[in-house]
Amino acid sequence: MKFHISHTTRYTYSQPLLYSVQTLHLWPASGPCQTVVQWDIRSPGTLHAQPDGQGNRVHSFSLVARAEEALRHITVVAQGQVSTHGIAEFADTGGLPPAFFMRSTPLAEPHPRMVMWALKTVPALVAARARGEQPTVADLVALASAVADKVQYRPGSTSVETTALEAFDWELGVCQDQAHVMVAVCRSIGLPARYVSGYFYAAGEPELASHAWVDVCTNAQASHWLSLDVTHRCPTDERHIRLAAATDYTACLPIKGLRRGGGEESMVVDIQIEPRPN
Image (tube, rainbow, N blue to C red):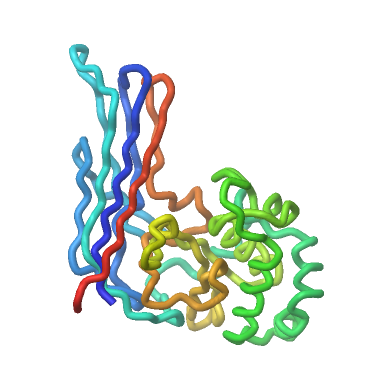
């Protein structure tokens, strides 16, 4: 499928903003799952490409307000067209080794309670891992479904700072939390896993446009991965558009910045996804 995507982020400040630097994970990359036909980012400052060891396209810009200016707004618009291929299994030999995604991170930390839960919930998968066998697609889909059962989808129940263990214990969260729990559980049982940020097309449901899912490494030697949507309990398909993949949300959130001045900050995000003929 081909989609036209428009992602607008607008910041408003209660006092004049003196200085701001923003880092953007807002430029999707072409790969096995998709082809970026055209893409552009409009920002109030000059964009600079940044190196990224995890294979993402990252940019930054900075703003310095002149004395006579009263900078109260920042608007960033990312838009373009992407063709998705409906591929969930792929080799990723150009990025970091899968072992990198076994590392513990603040939002997706492995935990013994997750191991015990997995032993009870998906015993065949845990037993296969103990024997050194590669996981099957069916076993990983079963794990994703079990995580979705464990962490019930409830908007507003968590924040962007909620950890995987907190969501696991509270048994509530949104797609970000479900993805973090899936990543943490996989790492807990010896499977490299990474967090994926992106877009999801659901006709008539624009609130689902911003989405998160996971990549799980099924064969470390071949750097073979399976992309799974925990919220929808299935491998990803042509409805999914990838933005970035990293160890957890904090390593690939769409916009992250530092500022001086501005007082109170508010943010409004609008994402529009429209299917286009191929």
